[in-house]
Image (cartoon, rainbow, N blue to C red; front, side):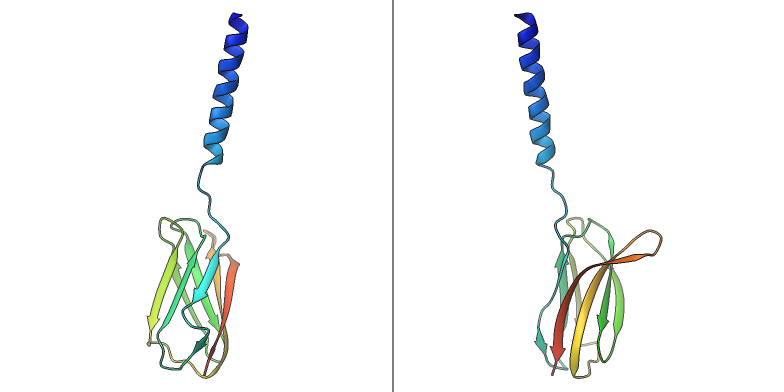
Length: 119
């Protein structure tokens, strides 16, 4: 009888720990979005994203007729937000913003991308 009680307590403890481990928050799939998909040359550009490791470095590469690169930091929850305002000069055309995770060795891994156009 004593062994059965110990076995039941052990099993309950094991499954309790298993359930707690499954409840941990993990980063989701990284995303990146641009506040406009059809932008005008004088429009403010805001790039946001989520699903990155908290406090990680994220490189944003805007590629198109004019290209820009900026490195930002994700907040503690893994979100990024960069408001370029109207400081960047965009020529009309098709653009893509790539969000890449920057590793400690300087290597980057493209995590997400979003196209947009400037009219």
